[in-house]
Image (cartoon, rainbow, N blue to C red; front, side):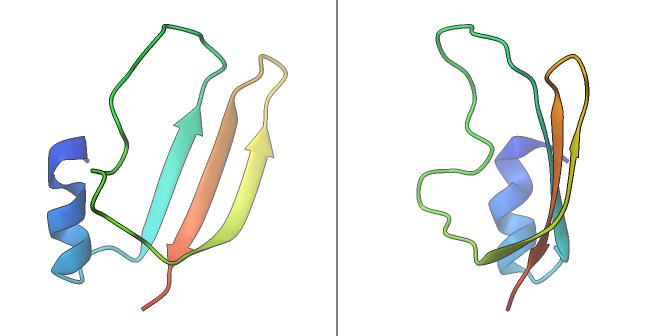
Length: 63
């Protein structure tokens, strides 16, 4: 899902889950996953860690 439309899908009630893949890379900056004005009530459903440092996080969106 494109980062720019994430908040629109949330406010339209189209998101049940959010999955983030976090990679341990230092680049000095980046793009926000959500815009600064978006506040979500999330519950961690699953966490998977890999040997290379990557973490996959799956969250449920509470309404």
